[in-house]
Length: 83
Image (cartoon, rainbow, N blue to C red; front, side, top):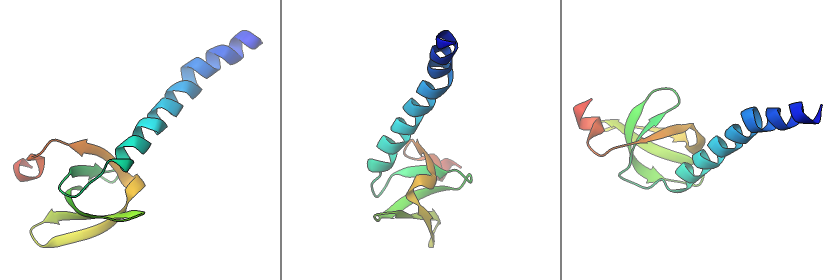
């Protein structure tokens, strides 16, 4: 029984905790000018970072506010122009 619990921990719980920690680090390092993708698939450039929201510019003059934790990935610079 103990062996199953240990296997369960290393196969399911530990990777999820690691992924959550990496996401928290990503969220804490967001700054204006970063290009990101949200969980909904919206690609944009961060223009303003607040306590719990970020403002994304998704097209020239089009800005939307999204919650910070909805940012899923940081993209390389220039991704928005090439998309």
